[in-house]
Length: 171
Length: 63
Image 1 (cartoon, helix red, strand yellow):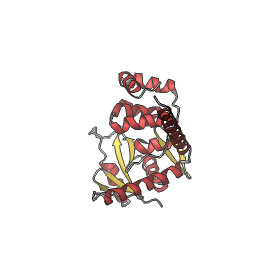
Image 2 (cartoon, each protein chain N blue to C red):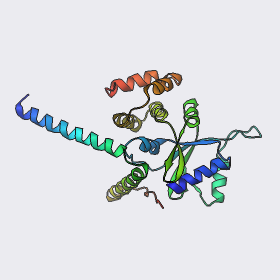
Image 3 (cartoon, rainbow over the protein chains, first blue to last red):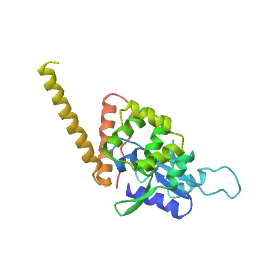
Image 4 (cartoon, chains in turn yellow, blue):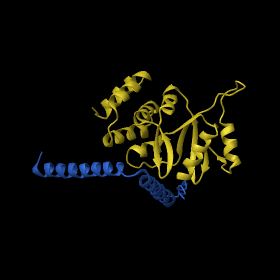
């Protein structure tokens, strides 16, 4: 996966993306036990389009294609790992990308969403697997409760959070 | 509740506690080791799906 991360960092250095952050199951794996996942979900912030047109992932795909990494269905296979690029699609995800932390994978830097943002995104997405993973993660690692509370409040997730805590009997 | 029920409940609770502790140990592994486990999970899942005659996604190919 280190080769994949090097490619992501190159996209950042070249300005193809203005920021990126790993999310989804792999971000969960950075913080907790390994989770079965098939794609490396990468949230991106794109540079402002000079012509004012809508932001598009096409320049990103074109740049990757020049290095031989071609899009297949919803992902691009980069150094043996299917990577799904997702433009930060709401204020919570944008904040998560902006405040992502840098970690090391081998000798390579990787940007990963903070644990508290990961939990909030799972809560917001709300699929069954997100709810289950949320419970598993909270059983294994302790988030910064103040930071999590702030994110939950800022992004209108208080009711969902309370419901989730009730359902999973979580304090 | 009979004594047997109590004993069974204790055994189950012990097993669940050990399982939870094992998961917390896995959470503390270096990320490189965790990714190797993810790939092994992908391989096992693919084998199981193929055995059931269902399409399977290929595991990641790590250098």
